[in-house]
Amino acid sequence: MGNAAEIYALRYATMGSRSLQMNFLQPDPHDTTAQDLDYFVWLIRTPGRDLLVDTGFNAAEAQARNRKLTRNPVDALEAFGVRAADIRDIIVTHLHYDHAGNLDRFPNARFHLQEREMAYATGRCMCNGLLRHPFSVEHVTTMVRHVYGERVTFHNGDGEIAPGVTVHRVGGHSDGLQVARVETARGPVVLASDAAHYYANLQRRSPFPIVYNIGDMAQGWETIERLAGHPDRFIPGHDPLVTELYPRVSEAADAYALHVAPKRSFAT
Ligand SMILES: [Zn+2]
Ligand SMILES: [Zn+2]
Image (cartoon, rainbow, N blue to C red; front, side, top):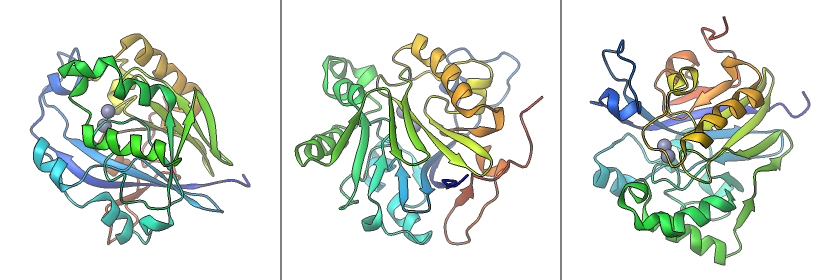
């Protein structure tokens, strides 16, 4: 466990008043209420350096989309004791507005992105309003500028970012969606991002309705389970349950430690 890292989920926004149809393509008829949606960025602390997974959105984007921004992710990091200028590597799971904003706030970072995500976000599918909706042209344009500035490392499928930290393309929700696998003291933890918004999306094999390719999404759930090796070691991208299962570790920031065992287990 020489490379054991720590992982912290920093919650920066929320969205309530959701319907079941907003959370599941085919809601379970036994469900009565829909869960809220939480928004996170994830900080990976390895012995040598800090890495960030996703960059969230800012106040202007929150207002445009009617989301409740608690605190800009850059300020959340600051409250947690991490300066944006000190972040050298950022894994961008995909380019949706809630994962790829604030790209201009990390002056010294290199961005790790799947080649297919850049192609998807700048290609013909963006001529379709439904597929385009979760993207912000400003975010995508900023990433294009980072490409021209030689600040993007493209990955195709699997890639290593640091010792014990790897990325894996799963697609599905967005064509170039990647998940991150992190070696921790409790074993490998998979940050699933939007491969599973909620635990239930993966556990029930029930897609979230924003989806580019359902087949790839279904394969992605298998991939996540294989990479994690245990049902307690995958972390969904937007589930408020994460904040109940894992200990809050900061007074100043809304941060939760994911490298420790959850308070209750999903293992049967
Ligand atoms: Zn997304
Ligand atoms: Zn998302």
